[in-house]
Length: 244
Length: 391
Image (cartoon, rainbow over all chains, first blue to last red; front, side, top):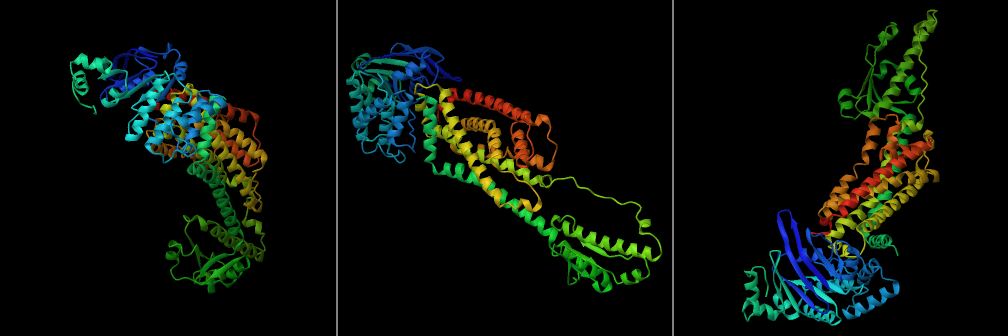
């Protein structure tokens, strides 16, 4: 479970995140929806302790990110906005590097790698160096690497960015599978169809604030719009930066 | 497994697979110095020997006016060339190193017992001609005093009357000392190979990793940043030391092909030299690895980091250039200055001069202190939020 309470982060005079609070529960997919530049990536970066909030707190399974960053990082699987691989290492070596950094022993590392490679359908690319991988192959490797330590909580920043239709479908399927395993899945997106199709709860962010929160039905009811797209536009106040 | 070691191992493996890094760190870097050094040294020695032994070729204008003088010169290793018409112009155009001109009035003055004049045309700005000019001048001087003494004796006087003072020169310089320029280059080549060996790792592990956008996921792991940095620095250091070791081995081989014994010079590239040179280089290589990583951390891209670090390669040239231009005596405080101290100690070692324990300790202690400061500064940059964020 990820609990976010009143996060603030400013870069100079720009308030990137200005009071964001929400809870992402286990066994649910929580979507962070907002236009480009709404503060989604900055919020997520504070969750996985890459950035320190100016104010507010982050708790992952009860552990405070400010006080126990290592505990939090161990409980999180992170697919950040930047998902570069080591191109002179094979896909498997990329995954194993992170497994070692997570402190997995050899036997566990092998089991986890094998099962992730099977689950993500990457048997054909596991032994290849990642130089020249397609976008889809890169994302698969990055996800395997992020999940190698079997984290209970998973954060994905725009996971379907740059993926083609088939890869996007596979990704959605994979997220649902993670939910079925009882994990807490939190992902950000600016694509409302994706969020609507996948999420149990939607947190709408605009200009660094949470402007609405709830299931798709609740959001529709809140705004009195039967059409979800219209509901989002009503909530955010403009349709700038959103994609259908 | 310790996380520092995990990071170290991954960086080493990844960079061993990079052809560019291998070429620069383990082939070009270590071999460039020894090859240049051996080539330049052999060339200098051969030329030095040539100039001492080979006959002086000089164009003599008006040789018919002084047959005895020309005969004397021939006996003493001068090979007269046919006369040239425009001596001044040919010397200025460097067609001739020098021209000896004997005026028609020579014979008349000589027979009259007066001071006869000969003209020596040369260009003193042309360093290559300096030795033959000096040798010819010396021969002419010798001919003059020899005949002067004979004239005095013919008149019943002792030749000593005409030379109340004689200077006996006793040169105390060693052959090593005379090749100061040569030795000033040597530490630079060694330091250069170490700097080049670590450079690509420093760029790849920081600026490169950020440009490839893999730094952010890396930092999401439950590993303290200083441990990640320590692993990366260790890999950079290892490559730099490997490059240095290869360079020392190459110098040991190159040393055999330099004909130093011909000019009585001692070049010591033996195991003792290699060991102490490696030892004194440890703090400097640490310092360089930290500085290179620090600079690479500030650069926005791989290319930018490469530009900055190429400029950093010029820095170790400074003590070499300084000492080549002003060969000053080594002061005690100089052994406390990183780079300068390595330079001085390596120069002493290769000249087979003793290095005191105090000098060695001062060099190591101050070098380590400087490296620690640089490591601390780099660690601070590594802890900044902006480091991981690309673009």
